[in-house]
Every structure is written in C-alpha cells, then in structure tokens.
Image (cartoon, rainbow, N blue to C red; front, side, top):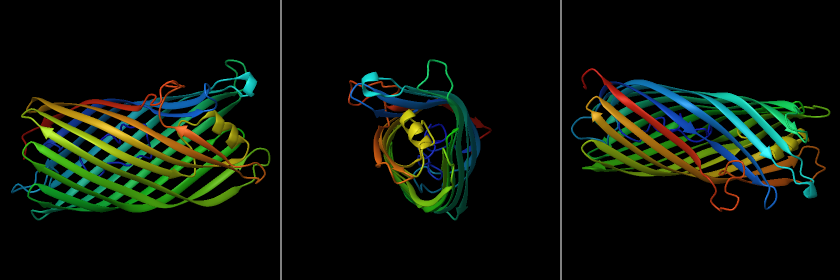
Amino acid sequence: MGSDLVSACIFCAGMLLGHDLAPRNGFSADMGFAYATLARRYDVTEDRVDGSDVTPKFLLIGLGEAWAAKDGLGAGTPAAEWRVRIAFAPSHDEQERKEQAEEDIERIVSKGTGRYENFSGVVRFALGLANSLELGGERRSHKATDLINIGGENQQFSEERSLTAERIDATVGLRHRWRDWEAEAGVVWSKDSGFNATADSFHHATGKLWGWQAEARWAHGCWSALARGQRVSGNFDVHRESFPAFADRDTVEPGSLENYQLGVGYAWPRMELLVTAAYDRERLPFVALAVLGTETVAFDSGFNPDSLSKEWFYEATARYAITPSIRVRVSLRLGYGSEQVTLVDSAGVLPTRILDVKRRGIFGAGISNGLGEPEPTLFIGADFAIGAPH
C-alpha cells in the first residue's frame, strides 16, 4: 500500500509499481484511516519562530485482484494484478509568526481549511513466467483557502489566500523475476504544479517532468529486503504578479524530484514487519504547502521563491492476520529534514534573501530541542479477502 496516498507531502515520491508488503492473492479490498502532518519552521530569532503546518486526516478505500508468480520466482510482487485506491481527507493549516517589538517583527497569523483528493491505480500483465509489464497512475492534490492577519489585532482580516499543490504521475515499467529475486525498471512522467494567490501577489507554476524509477527485491525464508529509487526533472513554466503594478513575470525555471529507499522485512506465521529508510529531495520554483508568514510578506512585496528541500523518512509497518481472510495493519512514518528557500527581488533592487527552513517542529515546538518534533504519518487499516484465493 505504501504511505504516499496518505501523506501530507504532495511532492514526495510515490510507490506506483512497488509494494512495501506483498498483497494477498485473489480478489480483496482494503480500507484505513491516517493522520499526517507537514510542518515548516523558520527561526526568525533565537527565541522567536515562524511556524506553519498542514494536517490532513485521510480515509482510504481500495479494491484489487492479484495472481501470484509461479515456480518460486520473484520476491512477492504479483505476476498479474489490478488495483485502485482512493484517499480523501479534510485538512486544516495554521501559521503564526510571533511579535517581538524590539526587533520590529510583525505578527503574522493565518488559518484555513482545505482538502486532499488522492487516487492511484496499478495494472500488471504477466509476460510468461518471469516477466510482467506494469502500468501505474497516481494523482495527489491539496487545495486550501486561508485567512491572513498581518500586523493587526486578534481576529482581524488582512487578506485571503488560495493554495493548490498537485502531482500527477504516470509510469510504465518491466519487472523480471529470478528465484528469490526480482527487479523492475520504468519510465516516469510527472506533472507538478503549485498555485499561491493573495490580494497582493499571484504565483502559478506547472512543470512536465520526465525520469526513471527502479526497484530490486529479495525474499528468502522469513527475511526480505528492498531497494528502490526514482527521479524526475525538467522545466516549470512560471507566472507571477505582485502589487502595485501586477505586471506579468513569466519565466522558465528548472525543477526536480527524487527519492531513494532501503528496507528490510521479517515474517512470522501470522505477522509481518517491514522497516524502511528513505531520502527525498525536491527542487521547486514555488511554495504551495504550509506557507510561512515571512514568505507571505516577501511574495506580496515582489520576491520570487526557489525551494530546495531535503528530508529523511523512517517508517515501520506491521501486518497481523486475525483470520485467513482479515489482516490488520499499522504504519508509522517520521520525517526530518531541512529546506532552503531563496527569495530574489523581482525588481532587482533589494538583496537576495535565504531562509533556512526546518521541516520539523510545529508552532515553535522543540525550540530548546535540536531535533524538534518530526513530521508524522500514522496509518491504521485492514485488508479483506473476497472469495477464494487464486
């Protein structure tokens, strides 16, 4: 199942053609609930922070059918399969930059609501005993509307903001199996976009990126292991406007998304455990999730953003068979990382600014702790057999 459909991170790499735990044979359904957070924090001074987060609560449902590989080939991925999943979530986002009069720091507060609408589908076709042709598609989207208070008293309203972040992936791959081993390689097309509009600024960027993905899996006895990677890159068409003239600023800017993951698993008669670690890197010419107050003022003043995010994800997944037809699953993923946002004055007058943003900690949490709080994703769910297995 993976955690991509129930993650708050829209632009993190997905698991379209890979499985973390092997699906059951035959016709089956799955469902689950997830809580996730994406948090960004900028330390304005030693004891004052600008913190922002977005928190969705997902309901996921899925349906699919799988046919196992024969003759002991492969490491658990079906020889043939079809599967669709939908994950919807209401979300809320909050941001606060606290006032400190001696530093002349404006108090900036924003709150809003939104929704996640995520879909994925995978189809595998068996090409003989050892090979499979794989097709996958996934769409992850978040839309939100915020009310912003810049420098005013409590409950004052300065402006409204509309945010949209979207990633659409399509993948074609070929998987080959040996005894206890399997490997997959594929081509990835990704359409990524970000939209950020207030009364005083407008940013919209869309990029159609191309790249690759690869996966290797091994399973023998009770043990299993996996390694996978994915990278897409290309150019974004970027349109920006800002107060007072709202002149068009159209540019073509580079961007890339990449992810590398390792994992190891162990299986008991009724329980399976998988632990993974992943490195995720995103280069985007926009900010459209958990926008900081510092960034809001900069965008309204005509600054252009460029974001480089690097994050580590650590995930543990356990699945337990209550009966042969019902298995429950619990997953916990924790993210730690950093982000560098470069702000360039579109008028070429003011100096370039660099914000060192932490991808951890919510509303200043962990100021006295170097690690702070991680970005969590918690999933609880179950899968159900429908009919007899193949």
